[in-house]
Image 1 (cartoon, rainbow, N blue to C red):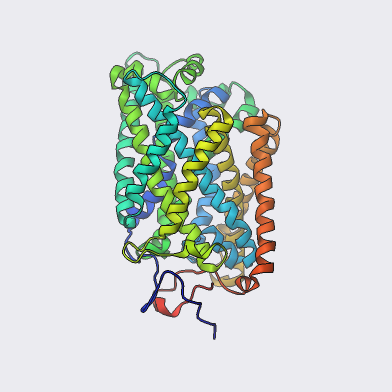
Image 2 (cartoon, rainbow, N blue to C red):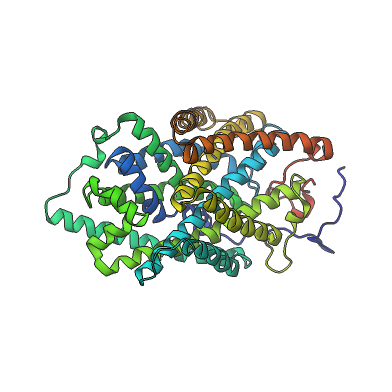
Length: 498
């Protein structure tokens, strides 16, 4: 018989408060993954760097990134249906291997999500500055900073509400941004097709202007685009029939948004000569706005507005998701106990939401200042996020093999639980080595080597944290990270070890 944990700020006379159950369907789950990838921002910010790095083959880079991501997405689907938990990868490593493995991944997993949150701040700040320029406000160093603070305030009005409200807002913004990005792509295809300028060059690797070296660098931006489908798994405890919806939500988010990017990036690659793209980047950070000016004239403001709304959509999904990971760690005793507090009315981890909002805003402002450039800050945040994502993805593939092999041998599939994860591990390791320890290590310090040094240092910090926690709270390692009970097991009878 295990001991009942001591009362926490979330406890009531009826028992500990939990995240709200059975409130999200398939659309809601898939939205939480797809909106993080952001159909429009994945194009607005990553298509141009891909093109300048490796030529007009962005559709192929998106396709390669999708193929690299799919084996890991399958592993997410396989594990999430057996271990639905707000802790996601952190909980899976705890259960599949040992508590120390999950706790070591915890800080890395959180940093992966925080880097993405800082990245979104850059998105909104830069689009906000661009929005002001449209109305004649001259460039100044404070415009983007004001935008970052504004994003935090707008998001706060939304994320303290019920999770269903968050999803509805995020879905509405995602639909709007997707329609705008797709409308521009259709406009380009109609115009260029009418002039006889369309061809299949963007789908030919022979048009890679910097050879394999350029492709390796461009793939970082491709993988950065796909980062986020895994966010769907964090809302497992709040979804209906999570063991069925989690796999569908993850794969649906990755594949549908990936196909959207391949189609739209083909149109954008045919929009203007490759030689003009660097100039467009220098004139407005994202090359899509100047291209929209060519085809839409004053209507280019729609690109800026969709960039603003897309940033808000990502933020209102990323903040509560990151807060839930912190909540799961705190619930297990692997993070400060106050982060496990559940608000009695909305049933959200309110303290975690506040912490993520504060760190998200302050961190974005600080690194932007240190980098002396919002573009450099964007690149730094993006590369950091990819590094921590790849480490997480490698370990999730390992968890798929280990969990089924150790605990579900009767369901172990040589293809889905061995071959696919091994392929995922191989691809992720190769990209991690080639893109970071080769390409970025030999690049400029500010946006290259410093990223690698920070990422490795943080992995060491995570290891030190495990050692410290084992000395201070050894009882944590004797418990189990909480997983949603089977439908026929009363939730009150299943204890989250703390």
